[in-house]
Length: 479
Image 1 (cartoon, rainbow, N blue to C red):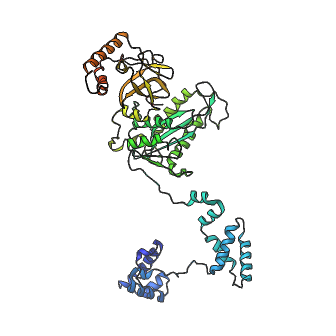
Image 2 (image 1 turned 180 degrees about the vertical axis):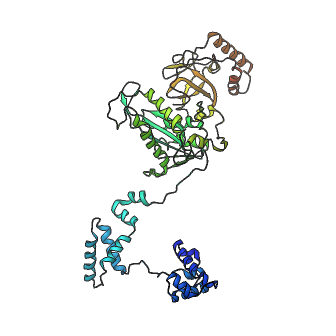
Image 3 (image 1 turned 180 degrees about the horizontal axis):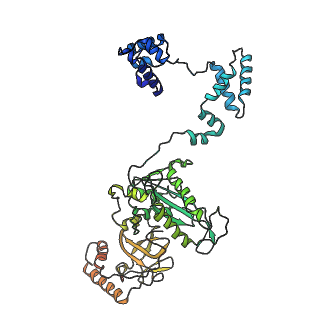
């Protein structure tokens, strides 16, 4: 039989063995006699000699009290144990006394020695709680309480971002003055708990809203209090259709983001963002008029006023206040160790991926027509008659970004939505330059590359530096 080592025993058993050794140590070192030690500690001499003998044979292990291998086990036959377990699992409200009577009746019928009441009591008490939970409450409740899950903890900034939506518990006045409840899309950096991006809308969650939130989260913000930016390594979400869309899949592949989805119907893996929504309710919404739990009848906030309040809370309060789990403000945690985020090569590259709905349009002599508006830019003079791809932000139609053969050409602006206009001399100059260069390249094998390069030669024709575009609130900070 293999000799046991101290490591195979519990801390309590090792501590008790050490106490015994301390008692007999003077005898082993010939400092005291057994009788003297017996009188001092009120321990029989025979017991002390036994301890000495066990120590000399097996060391400290010999002083550990031996426990019977069947200690704590119920001495009930397998058949009796099986029938008792069946009674417990089938009858949720059965008392222990009723269980004991039923087991005794079973034993009498089958001519088996019946157990005692104490044995039945201990048997029921020692039944696995997980087994009882599964029998009484079903598979879903069992998984929620007992399924083993892996707790992920990000070890650095931008390693894992979590995203989710919630219907906020507040009534607001929308743009038409109608009472409505807004949806909030949020992206959190798991390492620092910092808000990387958010989007507020009365429309239900969709792929466009998610893309706009991710666009804001990735690109650098002009607000110095909001430094969080960069491309995350992992993007952790639920199985919502907006997150699992082909569009988001393509974006993730191109940006080299690893998309991770939580198990359907099991939100525990997104616990951090779920707790964040609780913080929104408890620390922010409860103090505002229109909160669903309030009955004070105060005048409701407009969506514009609420956006200002929300931005102030998220960026100036939540991101700057020490978090209980990391004991540091999220912004300071994200800035640890002079972190340098992985950024896209350009804003145009990010726009090409994430700005909403690409549309194909033809360039007319008076510009590009889209959504009942006309968009113009001097650089478009070189592309009259050509088909281009435009991308735009749904909540800001003042301008569109124009691409030709997947290359960014210019930002076209709608005169109807802004006060910026192209002067006639600028337009005539652009047209004449186009004709002159076309004649020079007429015999070239291909004019496509030339048309794209033409954009570089026309950089001298630019709109005035001061533009009074009509933009939505806080365009670069809040979508």
